Length: 622
Image (cartoon, rainbow, N blue to C red):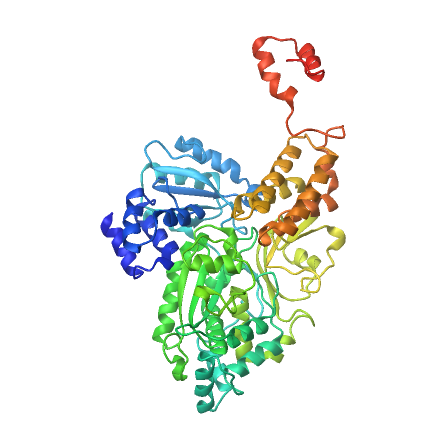
C-alpha cells in the first residue's frame, strides 16, 4: 500500500492542489481510501487529516469505507426508471444475495444507485468500477451476476457490454465537421500576417498591457461578430468573458487559464459525451484558439467522473497533438504561443458543473461554489484570470476561427447564432443526439425523433422548463427556450408527478450542503413530495412549496437551490390533476399521522380500532 500511495503522490509532485486526482488514483489502486492511506497522505502532502477526509467525503465516488471489489452503481435518472432499472437492480441483488446500498459479507460486491450516467439514450445503465454498461436487460444482468460470482476481471468481461454508441441522429456544422487538426489555429494565425506585431501582442498580453490590432485581438473580434454565447445553459456572451480575462492584470508569477467544463451532470444531457468521443480534436482546438485569444498558457478539461472510460482516449488525443506541435511550446511556430492541457477527472458531484465550484475542485478542494464577485475571469484557478466554457462552446469557437464570425452569425436566429446540440431521450422511437440551427421548434424535434402521444417535454433537465402540448410551437433559442441540451420526452402513460418527484430527489441528493436554505429546503421539498406520493396531500402543501421556492430563490448560495422547485411548480401549473389525485379530502393533513402511527400497536395489543380511534381524536391515550 505504501509504495502505491507514494507513487501516486510523486506523480503529482506532492502537490496538495491535486488532492482530488491523488485520492481518485489511490482508490482505483486500493479499492477505497483506508485510514492507513490517509495517514501516509497526511505525511507526504503536509496537509491536515481533516482536510483529506473532508475532500474525500464530499465526492460520492470517493469511499472512506470499504466497498465491494465490484462496485456497481445503477443510474437512477427518470429515463432509467421509465425503462425498468428498479426491477433490474432487484434482479441483480437477488441473484447476488445482497441488499441495495450494502456490501456483501465477503467484500466481493456492492450495489447502489447513482444519479445519472450520461447514457439516457441507451439505458438502463450502470457503472461497474467507474466503467459504463448500457442497454441493460434481464439476460445481461444475469450474465453480470455470473461474472461477479466467478470473480472474472473486468478486462475479461464481454467487450460488447462496454460498447457506448454515439447515437448521432442529426448532424450539422459541429458534429459533421471534418476540419483537420490545426486548421483553425492556422486560420487564427493568418489573421495577423505581421509576426513582429504578433510577438509584441503576445508579450503585452502576458504582461497585462494594451495591445495593437491583429493576431489574438483579431480572433476575439471574430468571436464577437459571431455572437457566440455559452452553451452550458446560462448563455453568457463568450467574447465578453474572453475579453475580460485577456484584460485582467497579472501579478508576478501568474498566468491565464482556460478550462473546458465537461461536467455535464444534468439528468437527460449527454451531448458532451458524444462531442468528446467524435470531435475531441475540434474541442481541444477550440480551447487552444481561446488560449491564443486571451494569452493563456495552461488549460484543463474537467471531465465528469461518470465518463472515466473516456479518459485514456482523450489523453491519447492530447499526446498526439503535442507530437504534431499543436500543444506545448511555440505551437505551429507562433512566437509565444505556449499552451498545454491536462485532464482533471471529477468524482461524482453535480454541483461542480457550476464554474466556481469546478475551480474549487480543480484546486483539490470540496466543490463548494464561491461567492461572486470576484469572478473567475479575474480571480479564477489559483486566483489567476480564468475562462470556463462548455465543451460545445469551444467546438463552435474552433469553427469560427476557421470560417469567420459572419459565417457563424448567419446560422440560427438574430438573437441565437449557430447550432444547438440536443440530447433527446425518453418516449420516442429514435433517442440520441440531434444538432439543429437555433430556431427549431419543439414540435419539429418531436417529429424527427419519432415521438407520439406526447404530453410533456422537459427542456434543459430538472433545472429547466417543462412544457405541455400547447407550447410545442415554441423555439429552441435564447429568446424563447434556452437549454443546456437535455430534451426529455414523456408520453401520456407517464405520471408527471412522479417525474417531478424524481427530479426533487435528485436535487436533494446533489445539494452540496454548504448553505442552510438549500440543504434544508431541498430536504423539506423532498418530504412534501413524498407525503403527496403516499396520498396524504392537502392545499397546505402547495402553499408550503410556494414558500420554499421563494426561500430557495432568494437565499440559496448557488443555482442548484434557485432552480430546485422548478420541476414541481411547472408540473403543478401544467399537470395539476396528477397532484389532485393524491389529495386527501380535507383542508389540512399533518405530516405526522398519529392514528396511523398507532395502528400497528393497537393490532398487537388487540385494542378495538374504533374505540382507540375515537379516544385519539379526543386527546385520550390510544
